[in-house]
Length: 237
Image (cartoon, rainbow, N blue to C red):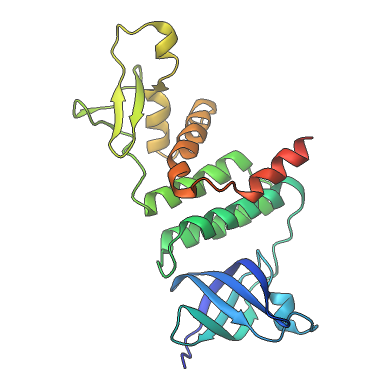
């Protein structure tokens, strides 16, 4: 029996047997943890009402297997109520975290970035910047975030005037100065990479960050489509 309290958010829940849920939690102390919430599906208990996404929680788990049992759960702050596009974005954050973060890998950085992203979505901050900041923190935790300041091929600092391509698992390499203009346009401006290195989101660095995050996250996400992305397509139509 473990009496330690965990700081957590619900990433996903699904029906289990006739009266229970299996809940995927993202915790500060233990990373992603799954637990059975017994006997709450058909009840009006406080426990059921708390097992919702975007609700800051503290909880106690029991059990020695990978699938724990939920003993106690309490709220630590009001639920973050999101609608429309911010809601779909938050669902994307949950699905991305659940898909990518390995079970049991605790990360102060990603957990803090997750909480900040939910707050920013609720506060109506720039959604593009909110999503990119979280994606970048997730990539950094997974060891896949390239160095935005160095040309890995020539071991030289990235220059604002040049264009670069990303070599997966290595980093950025400068395009030769004599390549055709049509090819140069496919490169990433050094000025945007240097802005991202400083955490600055200019119109250009925002576009570059979106391209980079999409490409770098692809092998982590795998071939199975993200359901939250499908919601954006439905909304546009």
